[in-house]
Length: 325
Image 1: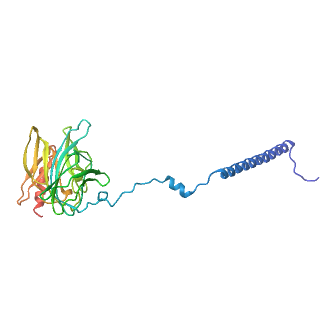
Image 2: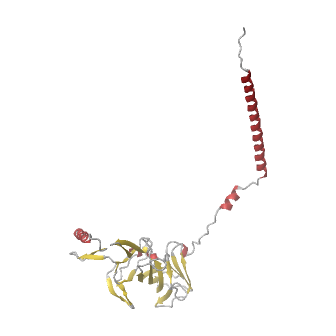
Image 3: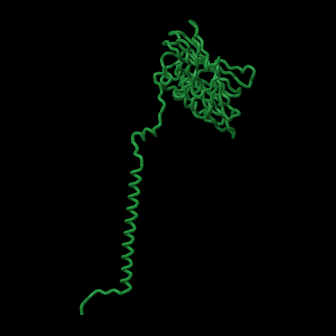
């Protein structure tokens, strides 16, 4: 009897049905693929062509150009003016105002020599609001020689942190001038310029007005030629609450009650040597001091809040070590 392979009738019918289903699926997928291909071809044909160069140009943002030929658009000061001295008076308010801000008010007179003829005064100023004088932010006068030229306009250039004074005519080379201003600034808690610091003592918040001028932040305290080479003499006066102490680079020259309000004290300090703006320092606080005079001519103080009891030992250690220098 011949050998062979046999399947049941039911299994054969099932195989035929599966084959027909597979063929139908292949045909359906082929039709869908062809339709999608034709649709994409039509879209490509009707879509407008774009120039890559023009597309890039249309989305690019244009940055306004800065005219670097103008001296107030440069970050370095011109050498046309050389500062000689400053008379600076500052009054910090150690309680917040109605807007919740701590502020200070001040006035400044800077004396400078005209090193080269110029019709513009450029001086650093940052985050200061000025009280106008005669319609301008500052007032200018000559010390001897011809009268100072009239001010055409004054402006603050935020990018380079300048106060710019445009004049009707040139300043005279070799002559001395003085420029006055009154201003207000925020006594912010930002560790820059004339700023606010806080500490707790006996569960009570204490506020200190102090300084950090290095490197470019003296301009945040008063208008100045704020570059290390622009050395000058500083005459500092601090108006402060009578129960607070005022300190600066130099010893106090005179201290008196503020006229009309004895709750404030006016402390005037001796002039500094000629020095850079970043070396200037002052502080208004409730700190107390411990003083001890070493054998030499140097006087040494420690200033700290009342609750800190480490001043004495620290001062003694300093005095012991200072004899070796």
